[in-house]
Length: 342
Picture: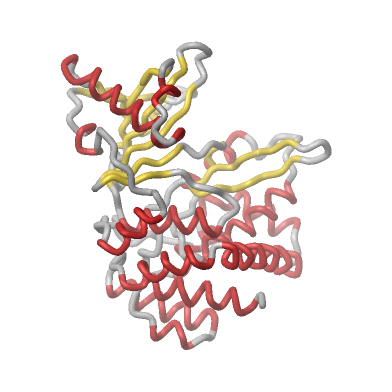
């Protein structure tokens, strides 16, 4: 079983990481920051469609600040989605601003609505944390998914990742007659491989979504991480493997029932090969990122010491024992995958 030891502490963005973000055009000036949103006047509990506490609260601003905050958020949305073209927000309005009071960094979620057709979208405003940014970048480079986000000073803006939350999928969709069990189990194996090789932790069912794509014969599933808070922080190897979280057991049990060990190894190798291809395609960008990560502080010394020992034991590779940072451990993990696929 995977257990998160303690509440993770945030880490500031280093000058070298800031330079990387500017070079990749991830850092852009915006007119409203995370601190501005913390000045809300009141809040009330937001319930989900089943009438249960969603663990989010809707915040309200004073009449003097509301218009300015809403306009600033619409401009942020135009930068995030249309490179600052304000014409795209002409018919948009901010319908709701929520805060997750139980989240590590107390993120804000903004609901944007098109008044012409009632279509809506979300984005998130968070306190910028270096390890979370590394998680977003590694997801963008090494996974089959592209991530849209931007940073300004100590504020992080993230796009909404669409899909059915994993915990809701397990609760309401696992018993459906149209569930393609083997494809779901296969995707979980590949997801487990993606998160472990780049050390993205805490991937229990509340921290990923399942994107369902109907095909003319079958249904395809894509599991996508939505929380990058635990990128390369914890010192336990099991934290980086979704297969060890009890919340994921219903999907894990499908795999045990439907797949042989040989089949699991086949799917793992398929995903490793795809990751190796992505490394080759983005090798210069990835090198710059890992160079930043290797010298950056994004964990505690005791976590680094414990994880490098566990990784060395798991892979039977002494190179991990020489790692002095979490970034160095990720570097060896990716190098091993690359060497294996050459």
